[in-house]
Length: 116
Image 1 (cartoon, one colour):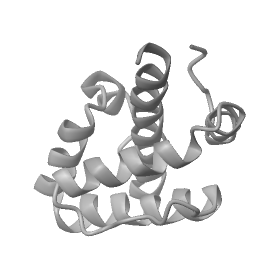
Image 2: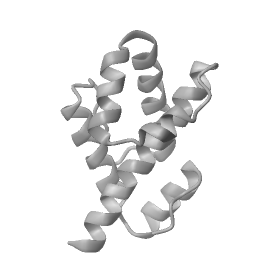
Image 3: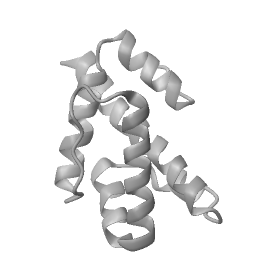
């Protein structure tokens, strides 16, 4: 597995393997487990997915930090990767965390597809 370095490369990989819908379903599953009030339709455009998830992560950081940490825990985002981010600008931080979330969800979907 080549770990994507950008949102576009992640979406390209998911589309090449016809796993984009499974990525959305996995994200929905983990959002539900974390009690985050957000659900995506399977056919959502990648840009809309990124925008809505980014907006939600931003709001969680600003208003519900405990729920934000719980979401990262449920999805299993690397703590060291989150700590390595610059926390000065919350908009940029939430955008970077959004990519880390999508990247981790993509890893789950890819591994499940490859080894099941």
